[in-house]
Image (cartoon, rainbow, N blue to C red; front, side, top):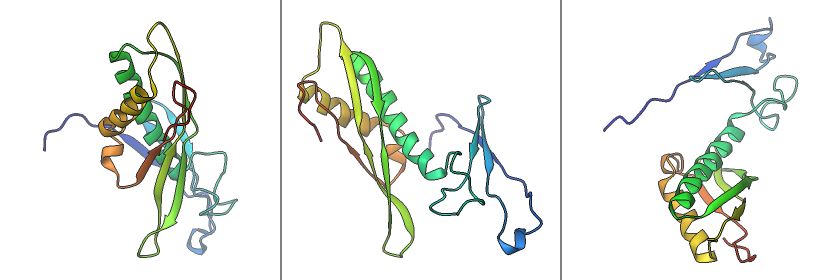
Length: 164
């Protein structure tokens, strides 16, 4: 194995209740990244009810979906630029689906990316160009190559038709 780089996240939680052993404690915590960003985190309220979770904080499932979407976008932007397509904006409302596996354990079984991309400039991608760019983005995304979750990309092609 060849080391390319390290990526560090520090997770911090501290007990704030005397009822820890009864399961009555806040699961709110922070994620601190090596660049200094601090993100308030919590389990999803669908897993741990309020007040022991905080719906305003990022939960691990949302972060997983966001990391897949972000990696796909960053790879797409790089590849599009290399092909001469000028991207003005890229918006994605990614959706993760949790199902139970064969052992009845919940897992994020599918993430659907729904990128909306605006281009400008002389050279515009065709539907085939966009399909190829999304395929290559998925193939080259570090995060997508690290998980077994199915990742689906749905996009509006440059010609106005819906891609899949």
